[in-house]
Image (cartoon, rainbow over all chains, first blue to last red; front, top):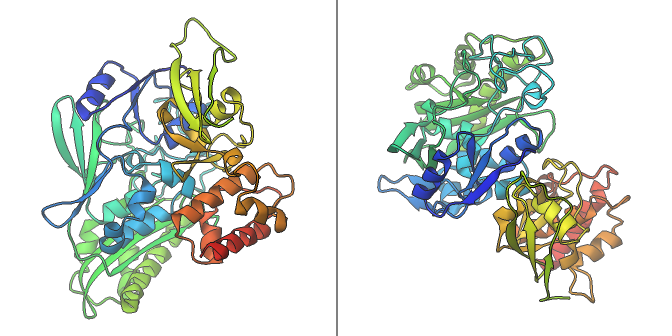
Amino acid sequence: MNSFSYNKAYDVAEAVADIQEHEQGKFIAGGTNLLDLMKENVMKPDHLTDINRLDLADITENEDGGLRLGALVTNADTAWNVLVEQRYPLLSKAILAGASPQLRNMATNGGNLFQRTRCYYFYDTTTACNKREPGSGCSAINGINRIHAILGTSMQCIATHPSDMCVALAALDAKVNISGPNGDRTLEFADLHRLPGNTPHLDTNIAQGELVTSIDLPPGNFTKNTFYLKVRDRQSYAFALVSVAAALDMDGDVIRDIRVAMGGVAHKPWRRRDVEQSYIGKVASTENFRELAETMLTGAVGFGGNTFKIALAKKAIVRALNEALKTGENL
Amino acid sequence: MKNDTTVLEEPFRKRPDLPDYELVNLTINGQSFKLKLQPWVSLLDAIREYAGLTGTKKGCDHGQCGACTVLINGKRINSCLTLAVMKDGEAITTIEGLSDGTSNHPLQDAFVEHDAFQCGYCTPGQICSAVGLINEGRANSLEDVQELMSGNICRCGAYNNINAAIMEVKSKMA
């Protein structure tokens, strides 16, 4: 790990001001991913602004009936919050599918959004990686790429976003509240993470020095028929090869609304709103789910080691949607 | 030893070109430690190398093995993936703090009873993690215990006996 200076901030304004003074500064909350990457010399901030004392550690009800998740609430406290469990079981399940209990007790909601990819080459400073060192090349495209992306890739980067929580947040149309030197703003979840394109070193559309303060979950009818399916090489404590957050709002046999978000397949949680829209008003049947899955994987490209993910993702979507239907029957 | 205050003056290195030490107050197992640390010292290194409590183990140092598990305010965390300066003023419990000084914690006895280790290197982390699991109150079956202990690796493969020890203590406490 490199040496760095360190400062504790006590409110949002102080935190935002503190980091402005350091071009390579980073906020630290749980630190589970940042410190890991610092130990590997993948990330080398010259300054850490500790935000753990900021007043952002509550889950509160919004006036519109939704919930506001403070950026500093831990992943464990969010997943096991009674309001989250009742109203957003998809989010609760997705969080509990990720990491270990110890890590979930440390990792925060804000930090989870900024997890870096677990691409082996990104972590290995002896290899070329455009995300770690822009312009150096991508070792994964012609290398070992079992865990890599099949959708939205570029010739610069085929890394995936590693979060489970973010897949559920994408499905639920969450919003991200941000404070920065130029004031406050809100981003739609779909606009938070980026595709790699020619700038794979940029994971998100949040600028250096901006701070996520909370995540808003809109009110909705995705409480009954939801399912988070995570397919991985090890049954627990492993990243997804493919994951699916499936949510249905049913009117008898007919789909009133539907959400399908995928993890482990792209540089960001993958949704196709246009495809979802075209199934509203249709019958929830395995046949329709299969057709939907085919369309969602349109444009998928494998790189050898990960080509199996295309078939896997289609089957995972069908299974997740069928399980979401069944989940409702049991309630 | 409890309630004593220990100040460790010069740790193993100090380079003039590096940022100044921070004075960090850690309460470990009820004892107050005022440690002079540089900001990049992990909580794990502070506990082992500065406070001298070597029961907590360093395995992978990357949050993957769980050997470094300690409890902060009753919640289990990986001490290798947090900085000591971030935990200034917090109450930390390590394996040394589970016994009351005369008798073992029930989980310590259960681990002996069930032969829940071979080499023993992961054991302090396993036991602290199990204490956290019981505090959480979310494990209702063997399957739950297996899932919620997945952050602790045992390379000797004593998992069946570890699970049996935890299940026994859980059932006695229920």
